[in-house]
Each structure stands twice: as C-alpha cells, then as structure tokens.
Image (cartoon, rainbow, N blue to C red; front, top):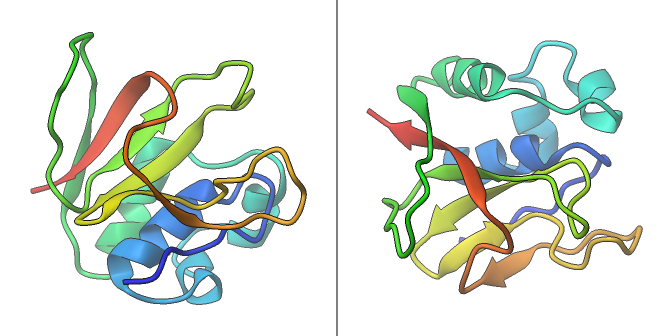
Length: 131
C-alpha cells in the first residue's frame, strides 16, 4: 500500500490510522474526536488512536516499550518515538511489510511527504499493537 502523508502539523497519528485502515487521511480524521482541531497543534494520545481504530472495527492495545535493541514489531504496529531534536513533539510511524511508514519523512520541511524507511528514526516509547 502507498504511504499516507499527514496533512496537519500534528497529524502523524491520523496518517498511521489511515494507513492501517487502507483509506485516505481525510476519512481517517473523521474517526477521531475533534480530529481536525487536534491534528493541527496538539496531536493525539495512544488511547485516542485505539478509540479511532475501534470505531472502525479493529482491536488494539498499547504498551510502554522497554529499552532493548533490535525488537521486532508485527506489521500494523504503530510506534511513538521519543521527543528529540529531529522530532520535537515525538512522532508516530506505522510498521509495514516494506518498512516503517513515515507520514512526514522530510520533516521539518513544511510540505510533508510520506514514504517508507528501513529503521525507526528515534527511540520507541509506546507501541500500539493489534489484539
């Protein structure tokens, strides 16, 4: 499947949900409470992402990721990476067969582009996994 580009500054969670649902960003945004407002600046928490997925018939849970290297995640897992100089608010990415779907791979450029990368660009903090 094609990578989904985030259309709002804090819309990486929406793009990851769209990728899992195999839909576009705008349709996935409707699955979130106050979606457009929250995606502009504040972003979303793991529980809100799970609620959006559940509204579309999918069962997910989240967990804190312990420090260890080379951890493998199943396809369809959403990872939140820690805030750092590259991603000052943190960032959500989705695991796919072709790598990690990054909804804003060219950050900090303002015209976001989505693509796949081989490795996570930061330290994973939370994993949102399918039940």
